Length: 337
Length: 210
Ligand SMILES: Cc1cc2nc3c(=O)[nH]c(=O)nc-3n(C[C@H](O)[C@H](O)[C@H](O)COP(=O)(O)OP(=O)(O)OC[C@H]3O[C@@H](n4cnc5c(N)ncnc54)[C@H](O)[C@@H]3O)c2cc1C
Ligand code: FES
Ligand code: FES
Image (cartoon, rainbow over all chains, first blue to last red; front, side):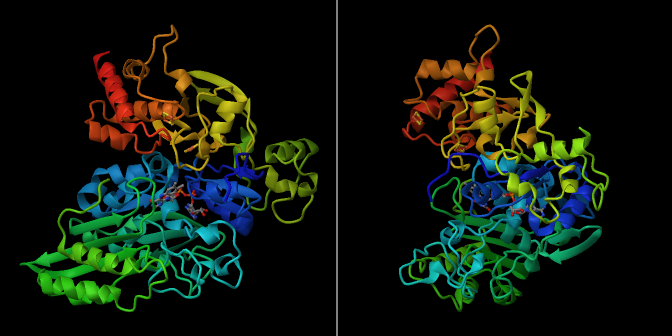
């Protein structure tokens, strides 16, 4: 779409300064207001006029939503904490390195200085048809333009598609699922906690949204339990350019070992399905296994079982298989930050 | 600034004509669409407007306090360029994809095309115009660029400079590779990266010696 070089269509701007006020505003205005954190996903929609809003609730003045606290061996990360702060925080780096690595590989330095962890896990998909305003399933229509015979679908799903073939674009999402993170959500005065794995949803559950957030909900905190602190981690992101680009495929793993045998593992792949895909079968196959060629091959093959590539994204199948093998094997990654 | 306080649940019930007009102005819609004002729904009621931001604000730019009338939907790049006349900040893509608009907000490089001006109220903003000293002495980064003639058309230059100045505050003595990573959020359409890096390295060295 042609880039429009003028102002964003008008909206009213609310800038609450406390969490309670923010949660109340979000609850009261529901669908009529757009929540803005760092705005790095929001601006595109509003500038391109593919989505419009009457009001924006800007969270940038809510100090309570920023910062990282150590809690019982784990961490509580405020939704408004920037990706730079996540990537550079000593406790994240030392004990939950997979998250620090993932955050450091998002977009560009300026985007990481402003984009937030809460925004990163709540961002919309990058499917070019959808983002350009085509009325596809995700936009309320009854077709997926990325899954037609002439579609360009190099970046789309190979697993878990249901009518819509868009993928989850987030780099931090697989890392958070691998860490058994929990999302704390406020709805007015009520709070609920959702496992990261359940926070992200695919089209068979909800074809219009990428997360369980409903209008009126505010994500306040991302909790990282102590469970995986100091485990063997791996994160790798494959992308076209070393800066700015979203993952073609990314992988996050957390592995505990004892005497050369894996005791427990988490392996999660991003950008292959509409939500970060936790590979339960792979994880089960790893429990009790030695890290050797046989184990790696089995993990790789299990990972891609059932994959159904589209016309232009068959490359994602071997890419996913090999990334999963590397994530189990460990060692240096091919990604440069 | 009482207008910035969030509205209580349900909103104020006793709206005077004055607060109504204030709300309308804050909404930034008075000229563009009057019909919009009278649509139904929770946000079109006057009550909701009372919680919106005040347009007239003070921005701290290059060490000065500037009073400026800012629409709620205005980006920092637009305020700097078209309200404050600071056209050294360039607009390339307007989509957070090129870096031409990079400025410092509290010493941190950000894309001014993708910042709501109202969200940086009270923060320290520095643009390329604020690099040289009051007596005209160039900033070491500017001096390094002159010495090494780092750029071609230089449309990307102010963004590169601001990204570098911000990066050096964190890492004053970077390797060439670290510096390249530090300015990796900036594109040069003349593809002059090698000379740009040499010039920025020279600037970093001058900054350390200063
Ligand atoms: C050029 C470019 C390149 C990018 N590259 C990458 C990349 O490589 N990897 C990657 O992962 N991402 C990438 N991004 C996407 C994304 O913008 C950033 O990752 C960023 O983290 C989003 O956070 P934000 O705070 O800026 O989001 P915002 O735009 O403020 O919010 C994103 C969405 O989440 C909602 N939201 C935000 N916070 C909350 C909350 N607390 N509660 C409820 N809803 C909320 C908003 O309403 C909005 O719909 C890129 C973006 C751009 C523009
Ligand atoms: S104009 Fe802001 S990044 Fe290109
Ligand atoms: S010198 Fe021309 S864009 Fe960089």
